[in-house]
Amino acid sequence: MLDFLLDTEIEYTKCFSKYFEDEKIIRFRDDNICDMYAHNYTLVKCVMADQEVEEIISQEIMQSKSECKKFLQVQCNFHISSEVLNSLEIKPEVSIQDYMYIASNKFSTLGGNNECTIKVADTENVMEDGTRIDIQANSPAMGEVFAIKRIKRKVMAYKAENNLNFFICYNKNNVPVGNCELFFNKTTAKIEDFDILKQYQRKGFGTYVLKELLKLAYSFGVECVFVLTDSEDTAKEMYGKCGFLKTGAKTILNFQL
Image (cartoon, rainbow, N blue to C red; front, side, top):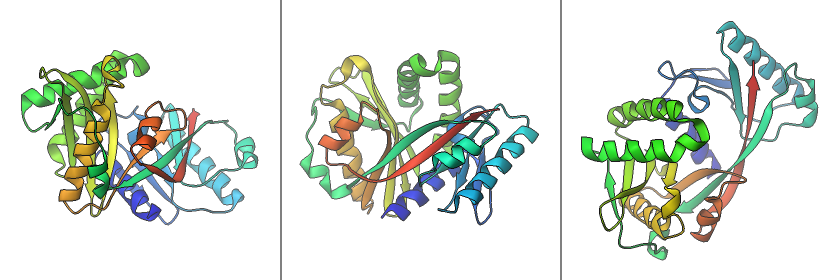
């Protein structure tokens, strides 16, 4: 199962980024937003010996410097030893994300706030609602200027990619309270950028969004839906209560060059 999730993660990034691939790595670059880590990183494709991992990371540091980049992000779906990290010329910030999945047919087990509605952003008005929600939800963490630049880039992909959909959650008064992406890849789907505004959290909106996305995925023949969560992500508790299970982990190294 994890292989399907990893493939979907790669295909999701390709919605935004050009890429170079060889037998060991995939290097992603998004010319539209060069300073966004999630669209500009190097994926180490498979488990390998410490020395080889060290060599690849060192080569990617040199490559990024040659491009005059201010950062390098390296991702892999395996543990990187402390020996490798300590041997690098630049010490990275390390974070771990968990792959959590659920069968799409579990939508019938979920409840949530039935007084809300979910709309796909297929009109300018709904897209504008989602854009405002995204900026409001993400500005505290990344700053308003970058949040605006980020969602503008994402809107380009929403309008271009048939398999990448943007959904907006409205309360009973038709006020937008949250948004979410759903990316389809064969029999797997990925949930990304799932935000419920703080004042509307713990009121059942998030659970209802998950229920509706799972139901939609199931109707399209998708068997498994997954999300990536940080170990300290406050939403992780919600995913667990809704039946999501951990099936793997991603190691992320961020280098300031």
